[in-house]
Every structure is written in C-alpha cells, then in structure tokens.
Image (cartoon, rainbow, N blue to C red):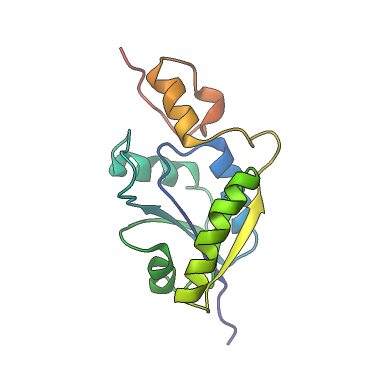
Length: 158
C-alpha cells in the first residue's frame, strides 16, 4: 500500500490573503492531503481572534476535498510530525523571504530529517501582499477586498 503524501502549510493567517490562497492551492496539487496549520506565534500580536481566522481559512477552502484546517501550538516541525506530513510548504515573495525561510527550513531539518520543506514562488500578481500590509490598510480604513479571499468577511471599523 502506497503511503499518502501529506503536507502542511503553516501560518498565522491574520488575515488570510489572496497570496496565501494562491500558494495553498498550488501546494494542494502536489500532495494527497494538505493540512493548513494555524499556529500560535508568541512573537506576534494578532489583530483577529484565532477562531475567526480558522473560520475564514475553512470557508476559503471548503470546496477542496484534500485541504484540512487545524490549529496548533508549538513547533511547526512537531505539528508536521503529528499530522504524518512529509512536507512543509512555504511561499516565497522575495529574496528576503527566502533568507528567513531557509534558516527555519534548515533548523527544522536538523530536528527531523524526514520532513522536507518545499518553497513555492508567489505569483507576481500577489508578491507584494502580506498579512501585515493588509492589517495596516484595514486599521486605516482602506479597502482590502481585492487582497483577501472572497470567503473572508472582515467587518469594517466604525
């Protein structure tokens, strides 16, 4: 019996963006099952509650049978092992992303050689979009509708 190819795509998704959506759909084509892991990053102060972020991610991918959404705490490499994943997918927008993600991937490899990190390039169309930029536009009452998936419904600040 052939082993299922399982991958994870970790992130805080605060909020999920069309850039995330693009990379996740790309990653989902490469595995039998893709688990989107909504992690708790102790270094970040989140704009949106984790339950809301989880709901947005689930709504975004509810029509994709091989995409699951789960919350997790702790190290991403441990979450990957718990999910029986062989791959951690990460999106790259720039060389700055690459340098940052390369260090994490190499560290993860030291902790678990069985889990491979795969970098996927962002589309030029979405390369400048990040959750932090979307949050800043949102906080300043800008229109973020073209930067987030259609399933995400963020209430406007009054």
